Length: 341
Ligand code: SAM
Ligand code: DTB
Ligand code: SF4
Image (cartoon, protein in one colour):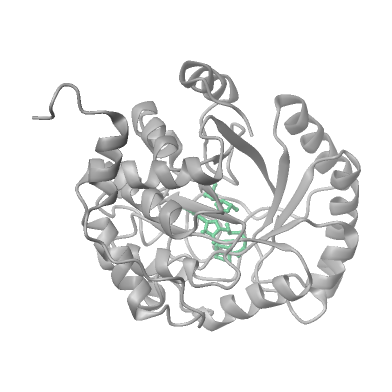
């Protein structure tokens, strides 16, 4: 048992002194540097409290721990996607009940962005169920980016793989962030997606960087991967150079009809550990507690904020699935004394 008069600083020191070797982020993007991966795995293996204290201490060094940034998502082109991502309700080949819809008209997008801003979101993220945008798809999306930017919101798009020149067009229209996830560790990737490979993803991320946009890049856990797989994903994200400004960590939302529906649920402790390891290895990135919050207790979400998550998706819907209601999130933030970031 802990001595009664042990000070917080002493406890911090004890946990920080746990013999885990530090390895700086690897310079090569793929595959993640073996030492970084090893380090991630050592962090995962720490006693839960030691890991959380370490993550929280890192978090406090770089961020106000009582602020959480809010982004709102909108699906601007839903369903009918030709890809085979095993988790995704929008892939045309799976029978999930999500119907294919055409690109949303500009006025509807602007109205949704206005509502998001009124609710308190600072970033508006537009998602499309495409393998990647064709030239004729991109023009109307550029108009959307210009219009959302004019509302003084940060802009984000997730449209799939980008071809040469497309990232520059988006940047010129005023896009601040491009979301493109690595999704898994390299070795797990082919178990989940076969219609494009890991290198395709890294290539798109490189194009986004070269165009001068901020990178939003994360992944999904709870897809049946091992702890090594989770460590490999976080290490791979941390080995991107520079590290992504924004790192969404998604807990798989299981949708009936997708190949991954029925996967045993990830223990909540492993989810919190993933957030904590991401915070430690990417100390200056915004770590987003992303999909999966509807199935998560508020206590677990609070632990994620302690472990270093400082961003959420805010709004009653993600792309096609449910997210906690705005009023519920507002009540949780009030309870925790968390202010908008
Ligand atoms: N089609 C584009 C692409 O794949 O890059 C953009 C949209 S896609 C829906 C964006 C990301 O959402 C995926 O990379 C994946 O990480 C996440 N996602 C999709 N379905 C999910 C699910 N059922 N649970 C958790 N995350 C999911
Ligand atoms: C991200 O990492 N998660 C968001 C966003 N980026 C685009 C998407 C989550 C989608 C969850 C399933 C759905 O609602 O369709
Ligand atoms: Fe298509 Fe994106 Fe879903 Fe994959 S994740 S099936 S690319 S919408």
